[in-house]
Image (cartoon, rainbow, N blue to C red):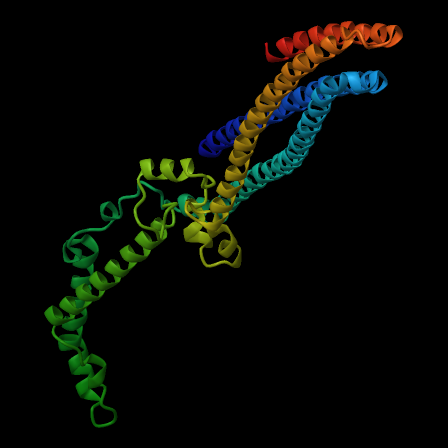
Length: 366
């Protein structure tokens, strides 16, 4: 039972470790989602500012053509960035769905492995109660020394001496007492076959041999019974270190201990796949690979966020250049006073928005 307690603690520890890893992945996805949302908000403000600048430039007419071209190029750059942002959001959503599926599958696998371990423990206890405990009650224990209870030479026992005396007495009775009595009625009935036997020495040798043979067979049978007390009966010798290695490989505790008793059952045809190197642990390993692949996807998402942040900064820089064109256009003498005032106001507004945008990017990258 102690072994099962140890493994259940290890299983709990393993489940916690996997849970921590999945929770870390989930938190990373949440962070990426917030970062993408922040980028999206900043991009929307950028696009609104660009659209307003273009409307002001449309009203300015041909005099602001170069500035308009700069803002139109900026607008296309913002659209491209928006497409990249949408692609990253789609990747994020797919990653979240995969994570949820992996979390659920990992939870079920952990519960299943626990259930298998409990079942193996109950199988062991059942066999111990029904078979092994009665053997122990009969005196057949794990430390039983069979040779200690059997004499090395049966002919030297007191029982052998008593038997030998009885055989000799029987032979003497036949040769002395019975012989005369049988001879007296010989003409009526021949009773001599009643005393037809070998010499006492020959009889003694044969009886001793029979006891030796039976004793040897009984010892073999007792040892066969005792062998059931070995939990690894019918398997190659397994060292404690090997057992630990099997458990470390993911094999449920108790699997090797039930092979002797249940190895021929239909249920064991299922249980054997839980062995180290078996198909069940390989499938679980594939699930782990799936979780590991999520880590790679998360790293890509982080790279995407960094790239998108850089691209957003590039659009801000491009907008600065476009603003300079807008400032030059606003200073053109050909512009009507009302248009010039409108464009100068728009330049000031864009400058304020640009400063706010750069501050937002700096805070985002911090």
